[in-house]
Image (cartoon, rainbow, N blue to C red; front, side, top):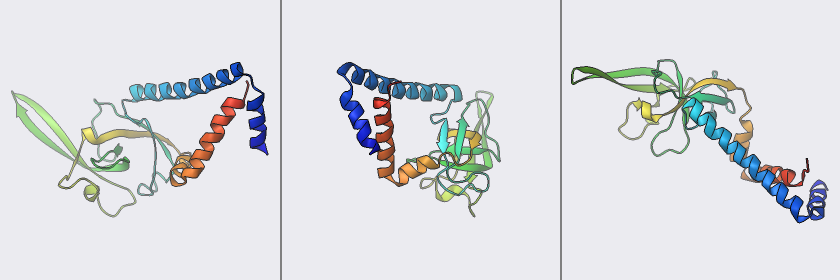
Length: 186
């Protein structure tokens, strides 16, 4: 019966009120996008907030934990640091700990230029991540890193996992939120 009340409210609105509510909804969506882009600039990460999708990092992080990332170019990657990286050919980034660092020193025009590669492993995994990397790749490079974990909120990202696992749930939540914004007059 609750959804019928919403529909009655929409029918009772005049065109000006309806346009105002649609504009309000557009403002909320554009504000969220601006906040996301601002976080990208501040953190230096293409994805400043990610959700842990598997149990490979337990006990440090559990499935559904929300991670806050930074990706400063000037900060060197260290052993023991938790990084989020993307592998070529895979859509979803992976959250794992840096296990080893391999540094190449090249002498170029009298300057020492260090090129760092690193190996990762999930805390709850028995072996390192070489099996996850693309064929023939044994180390990750700085360009593969999406960000480094700087903080987290436990289990708050479980809503995202539910929306991905159950698409009908996602559409129902989005529909109800959109309907609420359109009908809510304050």
